[in-house]
Image (cartoon, rainbow, N blue to C red):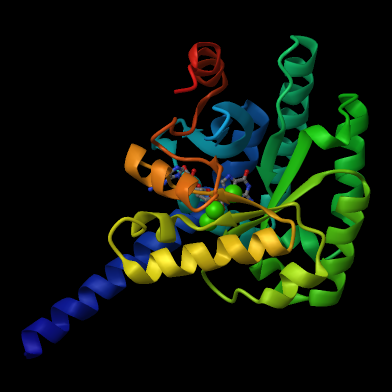
Length: 278
Ligand code: C2E
Ligand code: CA
Ligand code: CA
Ligand code: CA
C-alpha cells in the first residue's frame, strides 16, 4: 500500500509537471504562432437534414505547432484563457472568418459562418468594437456572422454579459447558446436572452438511440425550443440512425462527423461542392 501511495504521488507529480510545462509552452509559443499563421481555421458544416441544404458552418481552431504537430483546441484554449492570450486567438479567428464569409459571398455561395467566443470576452464591451471593426473591414453583412457562446459566460458576471449579448444581437449577428443541456443550464437564460439557436450538446446525441433518459431530455428540449421560437442544432451526429431519430422529433439542424468532421477551408469547399442531399 505504501509503495502504491508513493507511485501515485509520483504520477500526480509527473502530471503536474506535464501540465506546467504545457502551460508554459502555450504561453511562450502562442503569440508567435498567431503571427506566423500557425493558428488554422477548420470548418464544419451545419446541415438542414430535412431540406438537405448546408445551413451554415462552425469554425473550430487548430494549432499547427512547429514541434508538436496539430493541436486540438482543448489542449491550448484553456491555457490561452488563463493568460489572456485568448483575445489574440479569438480576434484573429474573427478576422479570418469574416474574410472567408465575404469571399464566399463574392463567389456566389454565401454561408453563415459561426465562431466560438471565450467567456472572457463577455466581461467588458471591448468585443463589440472588435466585431464592428471586423464586419466593416471585410464589408460583411452581420447576418453572415454567428457567435457561439456557452452559458458559463452568463454566470461569471451576468449583468455585463447580458448587456454584451444584447448588443451583439442588436448589431444583427446570429447568436447560439452552445453546449446546451450540460453544466448550469438555466431555463431563465432562454427566456431573457435573445438567442437565435440553441446547440444541443453532443453528449445527449451520443445516447439518443439507446438511453431513454437522453431521449426524453432531447425531446423535452425540442418542445421547449419550439415554444420559445428557438432553432435547435444537434451536435455530434455520427450516424444515419441518429439523424433519422432527430428528424423524427422535429430537430432538423445538425452537425457531426456523419456529415463531415472539421476540415481545412480547402477540404470544406471541396466537400460543399460535391455535397448531395440524400
Ligand atoms: P464546441 O464549440 O462545443 O465544438 C464542438 C466540438 O465537437 C468540436 O471539438 C468538434 O470537432 C467536435 N465534434 C464535431 N462533430 C462531432 C461528432 O460527430 N462527434 C464527436 N465526438 N465530436 C464532434 P474541437 O474542434 O476539439 O473543439 C473543442 C472546443 O474548443 C469547442 O467546443 C470550443 O468550445 C473550443 N473552440 C474551438 N475553436 C475555438 C475558437 O476559435 N475560440 C474559442 N474561444 N474556443 C474555441
Ligand atoms: Ca461551438
Ligand atoms: Ca458545443
Ligand atoms: Ca464545448
